[in-house]
Amino acid sequence: MTDQIIYEHPLNERIRTFLRLEHLFRQVEHFLPQDEPWGSRAAISALLDIITIFSRAELKTELLKELERHNANLGKIRRQKGVDMQALGEVLDSLERTATQLYKLNGQFGKRLRENDFLSGIAQRSSIPGGTCNFDLPLYHAWLRQPHEARERDVQNWMSDLEPIRNAIALLLSLTRSSADSTPAIAHHGVYQQALDPNAPAQLVRIGVEVLSPFFPEISGNKHRFNVRFLEMTTMERAMQTNEDVPFSLTCCII
Image (cartoon, rainbow, N blue to C red; front, side):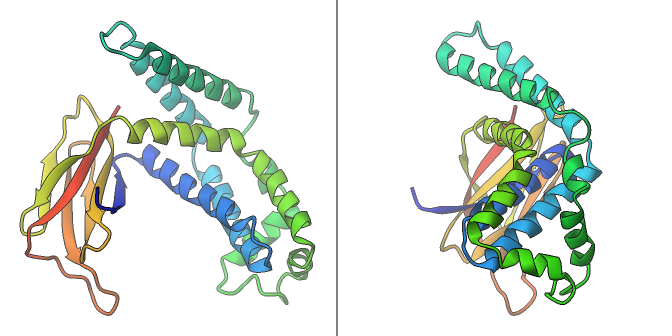
């Protein structure tokens, strides 16, 4: 199969939040092992964004509801013929363990981190362009010059509070993405539209495009329908919709 770029579009606010948090957790994971202070800066920036999302969303309630929904839906297929009972049992056990970890968390997610003076000082200055310069935050400047092992240990300590949330999001998004197989589709004259069954709400649309394709998709949608427009790739001027027929792979994740 030709290598593809996968473009994802959430069809509800819950999945939108999960995808953003997944992106930020990956950013921390990527930059934290880097020795240079710039890697630590990027990891801290992502961590502060995670904390901000936690302060705005009823994340614990949303995660538990989603885990319970998946557990109920998967439990219904136990008696269906052809079901791999061992694989199903492992998934159900993972859902139960993940929910148990979340129930053990007291209070609002990220509360200890929001009350951390060191992190909150950086967060306050981060809203100003260039506001985390050395002269603005001498404590941060001093911390960034500590040995990499010390910086990494601090960030891992802060991230430990968030591990149950990260595990829950990873499990839920994995189940969502694997809930359907991709099918070939064509955007005629660069446009594709599809209606959705509101009684079986889709959670996520995934569009696969060849890596070397000169086009990229712009996706919009909700639980009723979604639209895809393919635009010509450019970084020098406003992207324009193509008039060509564009082949792509489509996955509507319904679970």
